[in-house]
Image 1 (cartoon, protein in one colour):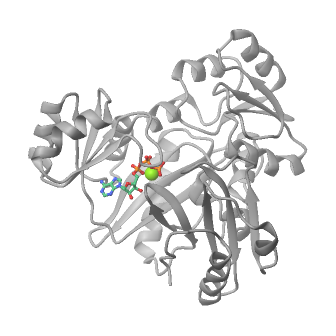
Image 2: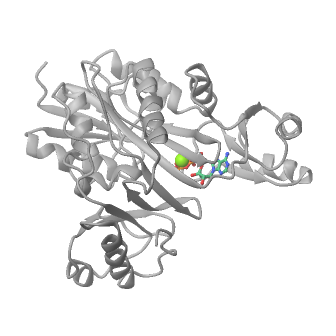
Length: 372
Ligand SMILES: Nc1ncnc2c1ncn2[C@@H]1O[C@H](COP(=O)(O)OP(=O)(O)OP(=O)(O)O)[C@@H](O)[C@H]1O
Ligand SMILES: [Mg+2]
């Protein structure tokens, strides 16, 4: 199959960055949006907020292969598409990653450690889950969560009803609260022939439920943890017969790594690779889904990704700084909205922290920089 034209479901910044990475390969991009609020600003847009068969047909007629930028897609849409064009990652991967209960079951099946958990379909079952797991717990809607939405931390038994009502979802995954030393993630890509390449483990820092900084590579990772992370994600990729980029979020604890969740797509914690790795996650995803050899996933230099959340930046001030790469998504700032990111690179880790601090000094109201 020779790929010329790629279809992307979803029209946000991830679609935009995939298209930006794929144009040098000579690919054309067609973007299918059902949200009514596309922001990608690139490629040919098929806007279909009322879900008409006609618009989907026109989109499919244009593309050789289809991928997606978010996992909260209706499964029947994915299955319909997969009957007509190659869909990567496949529908099994989508179904598994969009449902925390299935995801946890797969971690368990593959021997990948994950926080202890129970499923709850009512406030009573939530109470029983708390009894079984012990306090505190984190209750999460089984589907549709992102950026920490649809979750509640329960620290006392009398908070159960309020948590159930606040989340407002018929099925919850209830997890033991993990006191992690830090959050890590690993991103890997599996090609059409089953070959796998992993990016190094990176370190993630969240603020108010949203990723704010990624440090790549993560500092002082033991060889055991590096091997385990690559092994966990390879098992998942193979089990799912996956093609494309997969992200796996991990908690590092004194007892070892625990898998938190995975995402069947390019991931915010992989944005550093646009300037810190030889081949970005976006290009590698496209290489995989179009049957090309995979590119080098090694980190070339220490890089920090700074997420820009709901703010405007002084472009003149930031572009004046060295080794600082700006990626704006052309989105109107609103509180909590991801509007861009900046990758800061340096030759050594200590010069990186210095450089990040310089960048932060010209950005408005950023959370504390946690890495030095
Ligand atoms: N079991 C847990 N114990 C302690 N903290 C947790 C637990 N589960 C989640 N968290 C915290 O909440 C954050 C968000 O949780 P999770 O990744 O499951 O949700 P999400 O809504 O999919 O988030 P995102 O879109 O940012 O990936 C985690 O990054 C972590 O900081
Ligand atoms: Mg997460």
